[in-house]
Length: 476
Image (cartoon, rainbow, N blue to C red; front, side, top):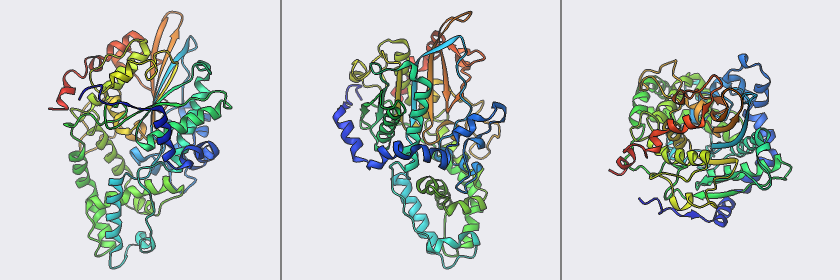
């Protein structure tokens, strides 16, 4: 596929696409985003008041809805956003001069495919002759009412909250003449997340600064914000199936014993468990399926399923996973160094060669994407490497590959470029994922997580070499 085949959706089309989404998705965030963000899940203000040594993941969310923090944090890629660490300002001798935000869309309904599987499992459960297990008594009168694919109110508020956070931290490097440059992949939930972010940023500035969504990358063509350009890549279904066969049979047996005639499979069990997350984030209150989830002690098993799905989907466990993030890395390097993009993989060379659609002189960039693509980008960069591949039947309790820390709903990577003075003078870079400073061993980061800009660029040889032959394998 030629890098010139994917045209930009024109800016007026970008606006038109955002208008196709319900108005609450793009305006509810600004109107009641602060209430939702604090009252529902994201207990960020509380977390940031805690001394660093007392901050744990459970401190970043609230159980006000009757869903414990431990349960919320077990939902993997369906977990609501939370800071994985307290944000640490850069060293006093360093001043941030450029910021790059890569962010996942906010909380959403199940995808269309997942919805089909969930409804099939519910129908089987409701076809049972009787309900003998107390945890299933609600099923007889239960009604499924979730939508598909689009953002939910919490998801709308998450992007606006992120924008307020970005404005608070980085407003000193932007101005009316130097606004954030914003792009999004063309999925409606990603576009809506981007426009919620721009509106949230404008509101945070008392509407003095009004960034807009400038580029929407079509998912039908070359798109560095979506994993759509490697048809030969596999997925994590083999490994998640192995894990399902390991943890689910006792759960399925109990469900079938408690609902004679349902004849549920292990796959049905997983889909029913997922309702704890989907319904809770969609409805703003605890799903009745969370009772089943907790009664079956599903937390660690469900979380590890997400870890395997991403690790073997577009992460290090997928031979053609990291290469899907190469194009974005090369765009990042171009922006960091103010040099033209050098890439022969996913980038659209027409767009990336234009100062209108790919400016190199901005100080704040925000790109909106999907979890699978972000995992590919993290893996291409070298983040979250594991000492050994994840075992599909035996989780390593010491692993650092935990999806709720990597790509929760509205999860984000921030790359900060800064100028330092003193002994270590010059341009430096650090990378944060959900506010946790990454160690960047691959470019010999110091105790503050800082690499020199030159060392960081040099460390990205895999991307700079177009995936070292892996991109061609995508079409073999």
